[in-house]
Length: 497
Figure (tube, rainbow, N blue to C red):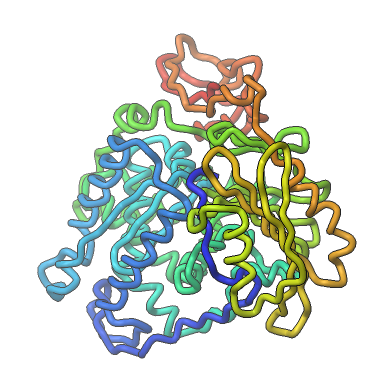
């Protein structure tokens, strides 16, 4: 949680969203042929611009202007080699501006939105080893936009239902964390969780290699990053917890990327740029993993050092900490608590009443509430899901240090007695954070070291790693094995706190 804010939608209604824009017969900039697309190019630009603001609000931008400009410049250079900037490409494509952003997320991820919006996370940047690898990733995402893959999928398939959070309440198997899209419009959520076909991904891999090779990068370097993805997948029990999970098997890409790079070399494109030292210098001191300053869980409590509060995490609940909200979900995903700052109302009473006044909400009771010297207001209400299941809602707002904090708790009505006590303890446990050790906690950052001897990688690890980081995590971060011999003078990334 960083910059929380409250949105006044009913978060317990499943929203059916279907990519059903009017079919347009238009040019594919990559193939040069006409085909059916779900959106016109102009519509794609508008969709991307709208979604961009929501993505920034949801995930936050990483606050390092020099690094952001560095990533953007590489992206712009690759764009000039792409099909969107070639002489025989229609003018409307050549005129489209691209935006490259670094998101403040620890997840290893990259994605693109229609109309020229490309995102990489700080988590991904930390796992790359040189500029050539970054070029292949950015080229891949430019390829998705150039080939208009999202708009192609809009014609070829219906995504079905994307649940804002109702699916979790109903116990459906959503296949993603419900907290990830709480503050996104249905259209943006749909685009964000769009799974491209493997042919799309292979085409974007090929385009990423092509654009990188044409720009002079050693495109084969991209294979090492996909080896890292494979290892991350193995660490997570076979599943990469990112949008990259929909991509082809990383092992397949390890083999294909060097082959494609060689084909471009044979066409006369000299590939000499790796730029490891410059790249590592740019990511030195980057935050690694979750930033505890923005909230973390320890010993059953959620702490937020920057906002100086804490509250209890009920037994059996998982915490999903997003920049705009903290979501607590039980193991069965049928009891939810959403914790936010309400920026629209100036008192606990007006905050609760604004929520209870929405269509589809039937108030049951409202009472004044106080806790740990804080004034508050609490309400209980009912609502109905799309399939007429009754939900019971408990909402509590508290005034603390100039903000209105709000717990929105809900579950199926027949389960409410089982969870009522745990729901009630959440606002009861909300208190000022006074522990100086927690208040002064620092994020883990990547420090560069230069080896003074040749030795196995594991010998360069500190005796203790911070924040439950494991030695294998650091090895993957550096794209080496724990027992791999490291030459003297090699630069390595080490997490320090």
